[in-house]
Image 1 (cartoon, one colour):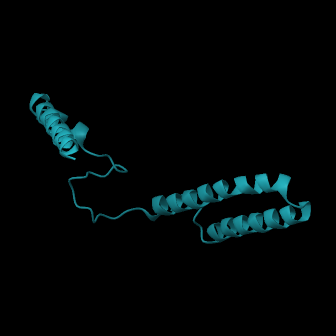
Image 2 (image 1 turned 90 degrees about the horizontal axis):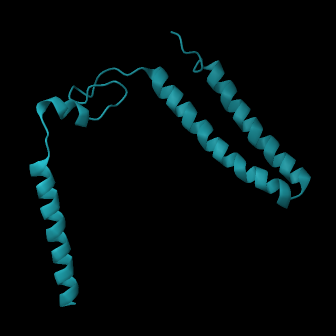
Image 3 (image 1 turned 180 degrees about the vertical axis):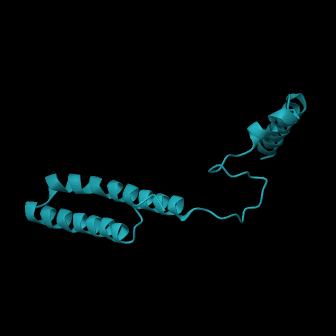
Length: 117
């Protein structure tokens, strides 16, 4: 038990020494400050986070996520084709495709798919 604690303390000391040395020896300058800052959709991370955001970007992202998950759900339907009765597979596939088409129709009727203002 004492040996394990000694090894753990030794590992922590070595990792802290290496991190401290990397901070001291790194050649960071004020010119490199911009390279280290995160880039999020063209927003300046040092400015206010409460600026207006285009709803088109948000809606396109939500639509992408929904259809991305639905594509992931199509793969088990392909596997079901070999394992279950054909009519059960058709009913499941038809129901799933109807849900997809209803989602697309709803987005189309709400003008979410139109990019221009």
